[in-house]
Image (cartoon, one colour):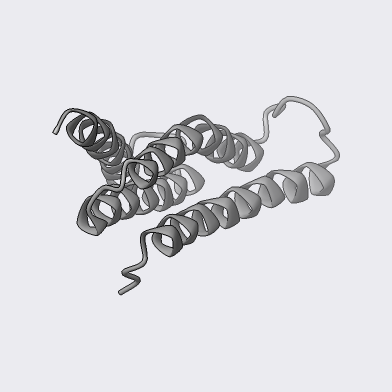
Length: 132
């Protein structure tokens, strides 16, 4: 386990950045393949790829800002890991679920819940370390 807080936050940032790049690449690759440069047309794989990337881009930055807040406030390594694991696993599950189906799936549900839990841990952790 990584026990240096700077390295921990850097690790979660790196993994989430790589996930975002992979999702962005998938959108570009599908666009190139079907020659649709804007929108999604009626192409379901492009819609799913686009949604997976968009949702990831909506939620990930806020979670990573929360991790940086925990780092700045010298929080426990366990709090950083709890928020980082929840956020990262949530984003991976959500992307997997969205790429498989545009309908509701267990992976999307758990991915969303874990993402929210990660953000909640970060938010409450920041408040705790500010006022403790």
